[in-house]
Image 1 (cartoon, rainbow, N blue to C red):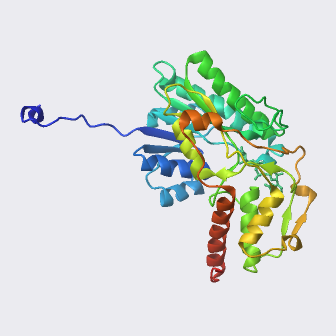
Image 2 (cartoon, rainbow, N blue to C red):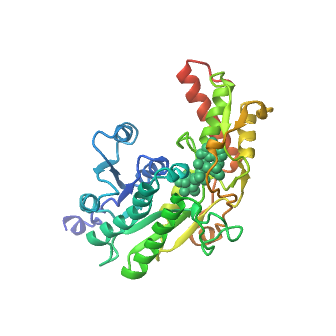
Image 3 (tube, helix red, strand yellow):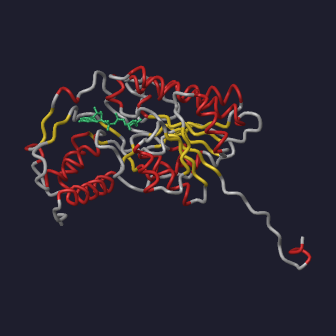
Length: 347
Ligand code: GDR
Protein backbone atom coordinates (compact mmCIF):
# COMPACT_ATOMS: atom_id res chain seq x y z
CA UNK A 1 0.00 0.00 0.00
CA UNK A 2 2.63 2.40 1.06
CA UNK A 3 4.49 1.63 -2.15
CA UNK A 4 1.56 2.55 -4.38
CA UNK A 5 0.82 5.74 -2.41
CA UNK A 6 4.40 6.73 -3.11
CA UNK A 7 3.99 5.83 -6.76
CA UNK A 8 5.90 2.53 -6.65
CA UNK A 9 4.51 -0.59 -8.16
CA UNK A 10 3.67 -3.14 -5.51
CA UNK A 11 4.23 -6.75 -6.55
CA UNK A 12 3.11 -9.76 -4.66
CA UNK A 13 5.99 -12.14 -4.23
CA UNK A 14 5.60 -14.84 -6.90
CA UNK A 15 6.18 -18.25 -5.30
CA UNK A 16 8.73 -20.54 -6.94
CA UNK A 17 7.06 -23.27 -8.99
CA UNK A 18 7.44 -26.69 -7.36
CA UNK A 19 8.47 -29.85 -9.22
CA UNK A 20 8.50 -33.39 -7.88
CA UNK A 21 10.65 -35.99 -9.64
CA UNK A 22 10.62 -39.76 -9.15
CA UNK A 23 13.78 -41.45 -10.40
CA UNK A 24 15.69 -38.29 -9.56
CA UNK A 25 18.97 -40.19 -9.03
CA UNK A 26 18.90 -41.67 -12.55
CA UNK A 27 20.32 -40.18 -15.75
CA UNK A 28 17.15 -38.31 -16.73
CA UNK A 29 16.34 -37.34 -13.15
CA UNK A 30 19.72 -35.64 -12.78
CA UNK A 31 19.39 -33.75 -16.07
CA UNK A 32 15.82 -32.72 -15.27
CA UNK A 33 16.63 -31.58 -11.71
CA UNK A 34 19.45 -29.43 -13.11
CA UNK A 35 17.23 -28.03 -15.86
CA UNK A 36 14.30 -27.19 -13.55
CA UNK A 37 16.59 -25.67 -10.93
CA UNK A 38 17.99 -23.43 -13.69
CA UNK A 39 14.43 -22.37 -14.50
CA UNK A 40 13.81 -21.32 -10.89
CA UNK A 41 11.88 -24.35 -9.67
CA UNK A 42 11.99 -25.72 -6.17
CA UNK A 43 12.88 -29.35 -6.89
CA UNK A 44 11.78 -32.32 -4.78
CA UNK A 45 13.07 -35.83 -5.45
CA UNK A 46 11.69 -39.16 -4.30
CA UNK A 47 14.39 -41.45 -2.87
CA UNK A 48 13.65 -44.93 -1.63
CA UNK A 49 15.12 -46.90 1.26
CA UNK A 50 17.17 -45.96 4.26
CA UNK A 51 20.78 -44.88 3.80
CA UNK A 52 20.39 -45.13 0.03
CA UNK A 53 23.89 -44.32 -1.34
CA UNK A 54 22.22 -42.51 -4.25
CA UNK A 55 20.94 -39.95 -1.75
CA UNK A 56 24.58 -39.05 -1.06
CA UNK A 57 25.14 -38.41 -4.77
CA UNK A 58 22.18 -36.03 -4.70
CA UNK A 59 23.41 -34.21 -1.61
CA UNK A 60 26.89 -33.84 -3.15
CA UNK A 61 26.06 -32.91 -6.71
CA UNK A 62 22.50 -31.55 -6.54
CA UNK A 63 22.26 -29.95 -3.09
CA UNK A 64 19.23 -27.92 -4.16
CA UNK A 65 17.10 -31.08 -4.51
CA UNK A 66 14.93 -31.66 -1.46
CA UNK A 67 14.91 -35.38 -0.79
CA UNK A 68 11.52 -36.88 0.00
CA UNK A 69 11.45 -40.49 1.21
CA UNK A 70 9.10 -42.91 -0.52
CA UNK A 71 8.78 -45.92 -2.77
CA UNK A 72 6.91 -46.51 -6.01
CA UNK A 73 5.72 -49.83 -4.55
CA UNK A 74 4.03 -48.11 -1.59
CA UNK A 75 1.01 -45.88 -2.22
CA UNK A 76 0.78 -44.32 1.26
CA UNK A 77 4.40 -43.18 0.96
CA UNK A 78 3.63 -41.54 -2.39
CA UNK A 79 0.57 -39.75 -0.98
CA UNK A 80 2.70 -38.50 1.89
CA UNK A 81 5.40 -37.38 -0.55
CA UNK A 82 2.80 -35.39 -2.54
CA UNK A 83 1.56 -33.75 0.65
CA UNK A 84 5.11 -32.76 1.61
CA UNK A 85 6.16 -31.49 -1.82
CA UNK A 86 2.83 -29.86 -2.80
CA UNK A 87 4.02 -29.92 -6.41
CA UNK A 88 2.78 -27.98 -9.40
CA UNK A 89 4.44 -30.51 -11.70
CA UNK A 90 5.16 -34.22 -11.19
CA UNK A 91 7.63 -36.10 -13.40
CA UNK A 92 7.40 -39.89 -13.04
CA UNK A 93 10.78 -41.13 -14.26
CA UNK A 94 11.32 -43.96 -11.74
CA UNK A 95 11.29 -47.50 -13.13
CA UNK A 96 13.32 -50.62 -13.54
CA UNK A 97 14.74 -49.25 -16.76
CA UNK A 98 17.22 -51.90 -17.92
CA UNK A 99 15.33 -53.95 -20.50
CA UNK A 100 17.62 -57.01 -20.24
CA UNK A 101 17.01 -57.27 -16.49
CA UNK A 102 13.25 -57.28 -16.96
CA UNK A 103 13.23 -60.93 -18.07
CA UNK A 104 14.92 -61.94 -14.80
CA UNK A 105 12.78 -59.71 -12.60
CA UNK A 106 9.55 -59.64 -14.56
CA UNK A 107 7.19 -59.32 -11.61
CA UNK A 108 9.22 -56.57 -9.97
CA UNK A 109 9.33 -54.76 -13.32
CA UNK A 110 5.54 -55.03 -13.66
CA UNK A 111 5.14 -53.74 -10.11
CA UNK A 112 7.44 -50.71 -10.38
CA UNK A 113 7.56 -49.81 -14.08
CA UNK A 114 3.86 -50.64 -14.60
CA UNK A 115 1.74 -50.52 -11.43
CA UNK A 116 4.03 -47.86 -9.97
CA UNK A 117 2.54 -45.44 -12.52
CA UNK A 118 -0.96 -46.25 -11.30
CA UNK A 119 0.11 -45.53 -7.72
CA UNK A 120 1.63 -42.20 -8.74
CA UNK A 121 -1.54 -41.23 -10.61
CA UNK A 122 -3.64 -42.16 -7.57
CA UNK A 123 -1.37 -40.14 -5.28
CA UNK A 124 -1.68 -37.12 -7.61
CA UNK A 125 -5.46 -37.56 -7.81
CA UNK A 126 -5.82 -37.87 -4.04
CA UNK A 127 -3.69 -34.84 -3.25
CA UNK A 128 -5.34 -32.49 -5.72
CA UNK A 129 -4.67 -33.41 -9.29
CA UNK A 130 -8.24 -34.02 -10.43
CA UNK A 131 -10.47 -31.49 -8.67
CA UNK A 132 -8.98 -28.28 -10.05
CA UNK A 133 -6.38 -29.80 -12.40
CA UNK A 134 -3.73 -28.21 -10.25
CA UNK A 135 -0.98 -30.81 -10.52
CA UNK A 136 0.45 -31.50 -13.96
CA UNK A 137 1.76 -35.06 -14.44
CA UNK A 138 4.41 -36.38 -16.82
CA UNK A 139 4.80 -40.11 -17.49
CA UNK A 140 8.06 -41.44 -18.95
CA UNK A 141 6.79 -43.70 -21.71
CA UNK A 142 9.20 -45.50 -24.00
CA UNK A 143 9.86 -46.45 -27.62
CA UNK A 144 10.19 -50.01 -26.26
CA UNK A 145 6.36 -50.05 -26.38
CA UNK A 146 6.58 -50.21 -30.20
CA UNK A 147 8.75 -53.36 -29.97
CA UNK A 148 8.08 -55.44 -33.06
CA UNK A 149 7.25 -52.33 -34.99
CA UNK A 150 4.05 -52.16 -37.04
CA UNK A 151 5.23 -49.18 -39.08
CA UNK A 152 8.35 -47.12 -39.72
CA UNK A 153 8.99 -44.45 -38.58
CA UNK A 154 7.01 -44.71 -35.36
CA UNK A 155 4.59 -41.93 -34.36
CA UNK A 156 2.07 -41.29 -31.57
CA UNK A 157 -0.43 -43.34 -33.61
CA UNK A 158 1.74 -46.43 -34.17
CA UNK A 159 0.22 -49.49 -32.40
CA UNK A 160 2.23 -51.05 -29.57
CA UNK A 161 3.76 -54.55 -29.69
CA UNK A 162 6.16 -54.77 -26.71
CA UNK A 163 8.89 -57.41 -26.76
CA UNK A 164 10.00 -57.55 -23.11
CA UNK A 165 8.44 -57.53 -19.63
CA UNK A 166 9.78 -53.95 -19.46
CA UNK A 167 7.97 -52.99 -22.67
CA UNK A 168 4.74 -54.62 -21.44
CA UNK A 169 4.95 -52.70 -18.15
CA UNK A 170 5.57 -49.42 -20.01
CA UNK A 171 2.48 -50.04 -22.18
CA UNK A 172 0.41 -50.37 -19.00
CA UNK A 173 1.97 -47.19 -17.59
CA UNK A 174 1.21 -45.33 -20.80
CA UNK A 175 -2.37 -46.58 -21.14
CA UNK A 176 -3.25 -45.96 -17.50
CA UNK A 177 -1.94 -42.39 -17.81
CA UNK A 178 -4.20 -41.79 -20.82
CA UNK A 179 -7.03 -43.49 -18.94
CA UNK A 180 -6.69 -41.27 -15.86
CA UNK A 181 -6.71 -38.23 -18.12
CA UNK A 182 -9.90 -39.44 -19.79
CA UNK A 183 -11.57 -40.82 -16.63
CA UNK A 184 -10.80 -38.12 -14.08
CA UNK A 185 -9.69 -35.15 -16.15
CA UNK A 186 -6.20 -35.46 -14.70
CA UNK A 187 -3.69 -33.12 -16.37
CA UNK A 188 -1.46 -35.99 -17.50
CA UNK A 189 0.98 -36.27 -20.42
CA UNK A 190 3.04 -39.12 -21.72
CA UNK A 191 6.36 -38.63 -23.47
CA UNK A 192 7.24 -41.56 -25.73
CA UNK A 193 11.00 -41.12 -25.57
CA UNK A 194 13.32 -43.01 -27.87
CA UNK A 195 16.78 -43.98 -26.53
CA UNK A 196 18.57 -41.04 -24.98
CA UNK A 197 22.09 -41.21 -23.70
CA UNK A 198 25.01 -39.22 -22.36
CA UNK A 199 27.91 -39.33 -19.90
CA UNK A 200 25.48 -40.03 -17.03
CA UNK A 201 24.23 -43.26 -18.62
CA UNK A 202 24.90 -46.45 -16.61
CA UNK A 203 27.57 -48.77 -18.06
CA UNK A 204 25.02 -51.59 -18.45
CA UNK A 205 23.37 -49.75 -21.36
CA UNK A 206 24.89 -50.34 -24.76
CA UNK A 207 26.11 -46.80 -25.58
CA UNK A 208 28.01 -46.29 -22.34
CA UNK A 209 29.25 -49.89 -22.31
CA UNK A 210 30.79 -49.28 -25.73
CA UNK A 211 32.22 -45.79 -25.11
CA UNK A 212 33.64 -46.89 -21.76
CA UNK A 213 35.23 -50.00 -23.29
CA UNK A 214 36.72 -48.00 -26.20
CA UNK A 215 38.28 -45.59 -23.68
CA UNK A 216 39.62 -48.41 -21.46
CA UNK A 217 41.04 -50.33 -24.42
CA UNK A 218 42.76 -47.17 -25.65
CA UNK A 219 44.27 -46.67 -22.19
CA UNK A 220 45.41 -50.30 -21.99
CA UNK A 221 43.04 -51.04 -19.10
CA UNK A 222 40.90 -53.61 -20.92
CA UNK A 223 41.62 -56.13 -23.69
CA UNK A 224 38.32 -56.71 -25.37
CA UNK A 225 34.60 -55.91 -25.50
CA UNK A 226 31.99 -58.65 -25.30
CA UNK A 227 28.70 -57.74 -26.98
CA UNK A 228 25.27 -59.11 -27.87
CA UNK A 229 23.32 -58.34 -31.05
CA UNK A 230 25.19 -55.86 -33.26
CA UNK A 231 22.43 -55.62 -35.88
CA UNK A 232 19.70 -53.95 -33.81
CA UNK A 233 18.99 -50.35 -34.78
CA UNK A 234 18.26 -47.53 -32.39
CA UNK A 235 17.31 -43.84 -32.62
CA UNK A 236 19.77 -42.33 -30.13
CA UNK A 237 19.56 -38.76 -28.82
CA UNK A 238 21.11 -36.80 -25.96
CA UNK A 239 19.36 -37.00 -22.56
CA UNK A 240 19.97 -33.29 -21.89
CA UNK A 241 17.87 -32.42 -24.96
CA UNK A 242 15.11 -34.85 -24.02
CA UNK A 243 14.38 -33.50 -20.52
CA UNK A 244 13.55 -30.13 -22.11
CA UNK A 245 10.81 -31.90 -24.07
CA UNK A 246 9.37 -33.28 -20.82
CA UNK A 247 9.13 -29.79 -19.37
CA UNK A 248 7.69 -28.31 -22.58
CA UNK A 249 4.89 -30.91 -22.53
CA UNK A 250 3.79 -29.65 -19.11
CA UNK A 251 3.74 -26.00 -20.24
CA UNK A 252 1.05 -26.52 -22.92
CA UNK A 253 -2.61 -25.52 -22.62
CA UNK A 254 -3.80 -29.12 -22.96
CA UNK A 255 -2.19 -32.41 -21.90
CA UNK A 256 -1.19 -34.71 -24.75
CA UNK A 257 1.25 -37.47 -25.72
CA UNK A 258 4.37 -36.90 -27.81
CA UNK A 259 7.08 -38.96 -29.53
CA UNK A 260 10.55 -37.58 -28.76
CA UNK A 261 13.25 -38.81 -31.13
CA UNK A 262 15.96 -37.67 -33.55
CA UNK A 263 14.50 -39.33 -36.66
CA UNK A 264 17.82 -41.07 -37.38
CA UNK A 265 18.68 -44.70 -36.73
CA UNK A 266 22.01 -46.53 -36.42
CA UNK A 267 23.05 -50.12 -35.80
CA UNK A 268 24.93 -51.15 -32.67
CA UNK A 269 27.81 -51.99 -35.02
CA UNK A 270 27.92 -48.37 -36.25
CA UNK A 271 28.02 -47.23 -32.62
CA UNK A 272 30.97 -49.53 -31.91
CA UNK A 273 32.81 -48.47 -35.06
CA UNK A 274 32.33 -44.77 -34.29
CA UNK A 275 33.34 -45.04 -30.62
CA UNK A 276 36.54 -46.90 -31.49
CA UNK A 277 37.31 -44.42 -34.27
CA UNK A 278 37.01 -41.64 -31.66
CA UNK A 279 39.94 -43.15 -29.74
CA UNK A 280 41.90 -43.71 -32.96
CA UNK A 281 41.24 -47.47 -33.35
CA UNK A 282 40.09 -48.35 -36.88
CA UNK A 283 40.33 -52.15 -36.67
CA UNK A 284 37.66 -52.45 -33.94
CA UNK A 285 36.80 -56.03 -34.99
CA UNK A 286 40.09 -57.17 -33.41
CA UNK A 287 38.74 -56.20 -29.98
CA UNK A 288 35.05 -57.09 -30.17
CA UNK A 289 33.44 -60.51 -29.82
CA UNK A 290 29.88 -61.64 -29.26
CA UNK A 291 28.45 -63.83 -26.51
CA UNK A 292 24.93 -65.33 -26.48
CA UNK A 293 24.51 -64.22 -22.90
CA UNK A 294 24.09 -60.62 -24.11
CA UNK A 295 21.39 -61.54 -26.63
CA UNK A 296 17.79 -61.03 -25.54
CA UNK A 297 14.99 -63.65 -25.64
CA UNK A 298 13.05 -61.29 -27.95
CA UNK A 299 14.69 -58.32 -29.64
CA UNK A 300 13.47 -54.91 -30.78
CA UNK A 301 15.14 -54.83 -34.19
CA UNK A 302 14.46 -51.35 -35.47
CA UNK A 303 13.46 -48.09 -33.83
CA UNK A 304 13.22 -44.75 -35.58
CA UNK A 305 10.90 -42.04 -34.31
CA UNK A 306 8.99 -39.30 -36.07
CA UNK A 307 8.90 -36.31 -33.69
CA UNK A 308 6.97 -34.00 -36.06
CA UNK A 309 4.22 -33.38 -33.49
CA UNK A 310 6.75 -32.36 -30.81
CA UNK A 311 8.51 -30.09 -33.29
CA UNK A 312 5.29 -28.41 -34.42
CA UNK A 313 3.41 -28.15 -31.11
CA UNK A 314 6.22 -27.89 -28.55
CA UNK A 315 8.82 -26.21 -30.75
CA UNK A 316 11.22 -28.97 -29.65
CA UNK A 317 14.20 -30.12 -31.71
CA UNK A 318 17.21 -32.18 -30.64
CA UNK A 319 20.48 -30.25 -30.58
CA UNK A 320 23.08 -33.02 -30.22
CA UNK A 321 23.44 -35.39 -33.19
CA UNK A 322 24.72 -38.98 -33.11
CA UNK A 323 28.42 -38.26 -33.93
CA UNK A 324 28.55 -35.47 -31.31
CA UNK A 325 26.86 -37.72 -28.73
CA UNK A 326 29.40 -40.52 -29.21
CA UNK A 327 32.25 -38.01 -29.12
CA UNK A 328 30.95 -36.47 -25.88
CA UNK A 329 30.61 -39.86 -24.21
CA UNK A 330 34.01 -41.17 -25.32
CA UNK A 331 35.71 -37.96 -24.16
CA UNK A 332 34.03 -38.26 -20.77
CA UNK A 333 35.03 -41.93 -20.39
CA UNK A 334 38.62 -41.23 -21.39
CA UNK A 335 38.83 -38.52 -18.71
CA UNK A 336 37.20 -40.67 -15.99
CA UNK A 337 39.16 -43.84 -16.71
CA UNK A 338 42.50 -42.04 -17.08
CA UNK A 339 41.96 -40.22 -13.76
CA UNK A 340 41.04 -43.49 -12.00
CA UNK A 341 44.18 -45.19 -13.30
CA UNK A 342 46.44 -42.16 -12.72
CA UNK A 343 47.19 -41.92 -16.44
CA UNK A 344 47.38 -38.86 -18.69
CA UNK A 345 44.35 -38.34 -20.95
CA UNK A 346 45.39 -39.25 -24.50
CA UNK A 347 45.17 -36.28 -26.86
P1 GDR B 1 17.29 -50.43 -24.82
O1 GDR B 1 18.77 -50.01 -24.41
O2 GDR B 1 17.01 -51.84 -24.51
O3 GDR B 1 17.05 -49.97 -26.22
O4 GDR B 1 16.40 -49.55 -23.81
P2 GDR B 1 20.16 -50.81 -24.32
O5 GDR B 1 21.21 -49.78 -24.45
O6 GDR B 1 20.22 -51.70 -23.14
O7 GDR B 1 20.14 -51.77 -25.62
C1 GDR B 1 20.11 -51.27 -26.94
C2 GDR B 1 20.33 -52.37 -27.94
O8 GDR B 1 21.68 -52.81 -27.87
C3 GDR B 1 21.70 -54.24 -28.00
N1 GDR B 1 22.95 -54.78 -27.40
C4 GDR B 1 23.30 -54.64 -26.12
N2 GDR B 1 22.70 -53.99 -25.10
C5 GDR B 1 23.33 -54.00 -23.90
N3 GDR B 1 22.75 -53.34 -22.87
N4 GDR B 1 24.53 -54.66 -23.69
C6 GDR B 1 25.15 -55.33 -24.71
O9 GDR B 1 26.23 -55.90 -24.52
C7 GDR B 1 24.53 -55.31 -25.98
N5 GDR B 1 24.86 -55.84 -27.19
C8 GDR B 1 23.88 -55.50 -28.03
C9 GDR B 1 20.43 -54.68 -27.29
O10 GDR B 1 20.10 -56.01 -27.63
C10 GDR B 1 19.46 -53.62 -27.80
O11 GDR B 1 18.99 -54.00 -29.06
C11 GDR B 1 16.76 -48.24 -23.43
C12 GDR B 1 16.46 -48.10 -21.93
O12 GDR B 1 16.96 -46.87 -21.47
C13 GDR B 1 14.97 -48.13 -21.66
O13 GDR B 1 14.71 -47.88 -20.28
C14 GDR B 1 14.30 -47.06 -22.53
O14 GDR B 1 12.90 -47.09 -22.33
C15 GDR B 1 14.63 -47.28 -23.98
O15 GDR B 1 16.04 -47.27 -24.16
C16 GDR B 1 14.04 -46.19 -24.86
